[in-house]
Length: 450
Image (cartoon, rainbow, N blue to C red; front, side, top):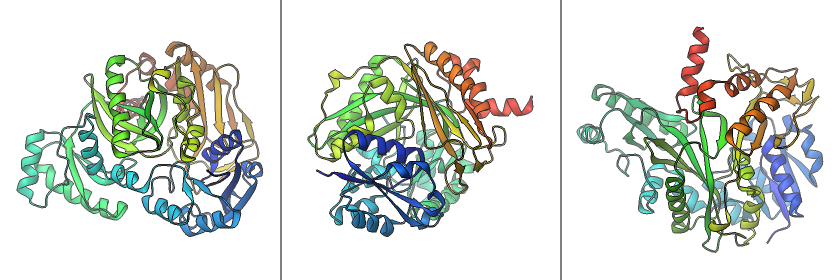
C-alpha cells in the first residue's frame, strides 16, 4: 500500500492521473522540466519538483532525477503515464530496486511484450490469433529468408523486434525488394531501438486497427473492457478513436477478448494493457501489446463505466478487481479526437501562446486537457493539447454530438487540427464506419489534389 504517488509525466495525462489519485485520497507529487515550470496543473499537486531542462532526455527521461525526486518527496509509487518511461523495463527495475511501486506491469512482462517476436510467441501459446509468419527473428542466411517469405506469400512486412510508433518496418512486394529492405530495417532497428533483430510476417492489404483493453490484478483475475477502433491514422499515428469497433460480430469479439484475458493470466500480467490487432475479412491478427495506459483510454471508460486509471492505481496497491467479466457490458458509443497544435493541412507543429480557449460541454461531452487561455505550448514535446471525447446512446447519436462539440470548440493564438476533425466527422466513409488503416492517407491525398 502507498499514500503518495509521483507522476513522471507532463501535460494532459499528468493531470488525468492527478485527478484519479485525488479521487483515491492520495498525496500527489509532480515532476516537471524547466519548460513546464508555469504549467497550470502543477498548482494542483501537493508538491512540484523541477528535474531538468526542457529536453526530454534531461528531464522526463532522466531516470536518476526522477528517482531522486521520489526520494526527496517521500513518494512511495511512480505513475509513468504514457510515452516517456512508461514501457521501459530497465526503469521499472530501478524503481523496484529503490523499494518503490511502479504503477504498471512488472519489468519481466514489459520485456516479454516489448519484444514483438517474444510477444507473438507468448500470444500464440495463449490462443491469441496472430498475423501469419514465424515466431522467431529472421536468420542471417539470405536463402532462408527468401524461403520464409515465399512460404508466407507476398506482400510481406519486415519489422523491428523492438520497434513501435510506426518506425522500423518495411513493406516488401516481391523477392527483389526483400534483402535491401531487410538490410535497411536491421540498421534502423539497431540505431533506433538498440536491437537489430527483425522478423517477417504477412502484410495485410486493407486491415482495420482494432484494440482490446484489458485490466488484470495480482490475484490472477483479468478482464477485457470491450473494443476500440483506431483505424483513422496518419503516418501510423492515431487521429480519431472510437469504442466499440463498429460492425464486428459480438461473438467474435468475445472470443478474442477472452483469449486476451487468458494471456494476461498466463504471463502473470498486472495492470492495464491493450492488445492491438489488425482486423480483415472477419479475422483478428495480433500485432503488439501496449503495456501501459493509452491515449485513447477515455472512450473505453465511457462505454464501460469504469475509471481505468483509478483501477490501475488500485491494482498497483494490491487490491483485487471489484468486478468479473460478467459484470462488464458496453454502453452506447464513444469517439475521441486528438486536438494537436499543428497546421491542419501541412501538419507542421504550431507552438506558441493560446490567446482564447473555449471548450464544449453538455451531456456526454468530456475534454481532457492541461491547456487554457494564456498557456504557452512548448516546442519540445508532443503537440497534443487536448482530447475531445463524446458519448452517445448509439454511434449515430455520438457522431451528432461530436459534430456539435467540434463546432463549439475554439482555440486561438495557435493553429490546431480542429478543421481537419470537423471535415472528418462529416466524411461519408467515416460516418459509414469500418474504414481501413490507409483510409485517411488516401483521403488526404485526394484533398490535396482537389
